[in-house]
Image 1: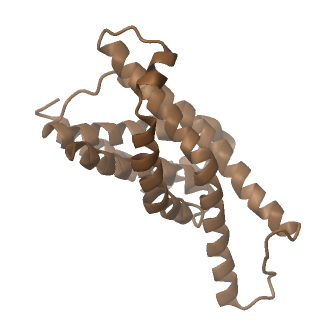
Image 2 (image 1 turned 180 degrees about the vertical axis):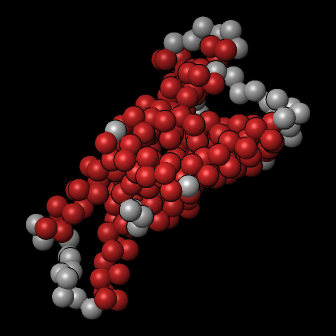
Image 3 (image 1 turned 30 degrees about the horizontal axis):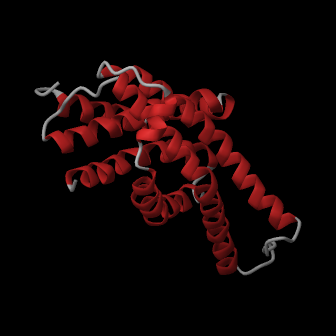
Amino acid sequence: MKKYGTILWVGLLAAITAFLIIKPTHLLFVHATERYPYLMGFVKFAILSMMGEFLAARIVHKEWVMVKGVLPKMLVWGILGMMIVLMFSVFSGGVDNAVAQGLIGGCSGSCPVAVQYFFKFRRALLISVFMNLTFGPVFMAAHRVTDVYIDKRYQGEKSSVGSIVDSIDWGKFIKEIVGVTIPVFWIPAHTVTFLLPGTYRVLFAASLSIVLGLILSFAKMRK
């Protein structure tokens, strides 16, 4: 892992990029995403989020190391990816329905083009804000609990979910993770996400975990 980590990581990223660029596999990706949204959400998050964890570990340890509990963590990320697929639909549909009912101001097709672009951006921003201020903290907390639980199990510690919850510094979690990454990173990033075509949103959201891995690794280095 130490010797070939960079080759493996970059090679996997290049393979994923090529899969999305080459026309036949690109069409296969689009078809699979539309027909099997939950399965594709699972696969995207399981792979890309673990790539983010490996990259974060590489920066923290100054060398490539094997992340403990890879398969359980991929399972957790995959399940969270399926939840993301559903939440994207729930929150985007919620904002659209609120506009349709007149609860949020909208713009018809007769509006000037510049105004239509503004409302398109505002729609993406509102979806991102509502999702990240409600579902976001729950998502992060669930991942933190499962991540700590898996780490402790692979360290030989037998811990219950209750003891894991009690061991986490929730004040610090709210202040540094939720209070910083949501307004600074997740809301802007997901605003961009909801400006993309629906087929690519979950993929882009999963790829953001690589960037988040960098952010969290630098936070660990400062401790």
